[in-house]
Amino acid sequence: MTSEKKKALTPIESLFQEYVVPFSYPVNWKLFDQFKLKKYPAKESYEATVYFGYLASWQSFYTKKRKLQKGGYFFRSVDDVTDDIYLSQRAQLRAKKILEDQGLITTKTRPGQASLVKVNVNKSAKYLNRAQIEYATKHKRGDKPGSKRDTNNGLELNGNSNKEGKGVETEKQVSTITFNDYKNTNLKPYKTYTRNDDDDEKYDMGELINCIEYFLLKHEQTFNNRPGKWTKVLQLDTWEVVFYKMMFVSDTEGRLYDVNGKRAEMSAELKLSADDVRTMIDYYFSKEYQKGCDYSIVHFNNHEIKRTLYYELFD
Image (tube, rainbow, N blue to C red; front, side):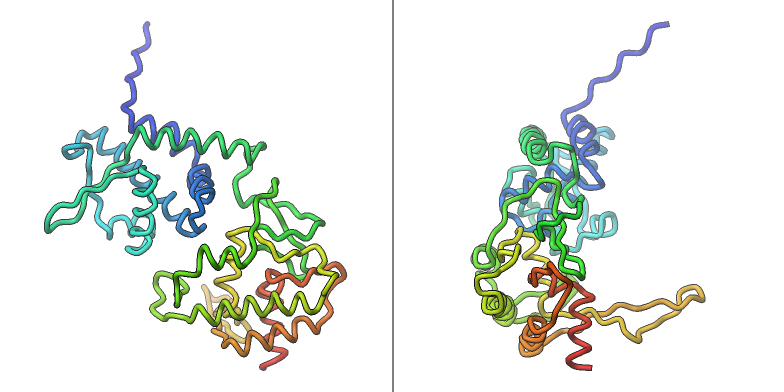
């Protein structure tokens, strides 16, 4: 009995099955890593990665069903995408811009109607080939970005620092930048910022930058020629973690609610004024933490450390 000859995959089916699916954990880390190398912020790189996988899967589906429109285009509404992968309209716009800028997708506007989209298969295959090679060079053991191990060198490369001030890093150290470089490349164009897509309140970028620079100045004044292992140089996505945490403190004390008859703690965040943050920074550098603590800005923003500072000062 002879086996039936396997039907050849179409280019988009090959792209989806041989690249998007095998590289996903659950997102395509190789593509995410490539966007980060091109200096896109971590959040936007993640959104673009998820959106690309989503488009590739639907284009593969429509190819199989022979429902693609002329030129290989198809349509998925904003609401459909949000329901399927929880990307808001703004997140979809950000993701679409990255993918278009990199030539991975093409959109076609229909007068008076929503636009169509398609994945540029050949361009995407070459892009992912390059991403795979560069990713394999950086992560020789095949570790996913974000897998961590404790170290004794105090580096805080992934925005993580425990309450003793001990950092964690990835298997292989990656390039780091100063806050000044991060500010000039990521924050300079903006006067205000929001915490997330659902947040309508705008916060003053100047206050936030001032507080981070105040922390760096106090660190230098406190340690002078003894800066410890933290050199005020962090990974790009670590600065992003600092950016979103700096003006807020986690508040969980005394907030309880019932879940299936059990009492649980409800987490909330309090917005801090610039004066509050500077007061907390002064107090932070007056305290003694466990031996070996580097008094880094990541340690300061650890939710337990920061909440304790807040309640000791203001409660």
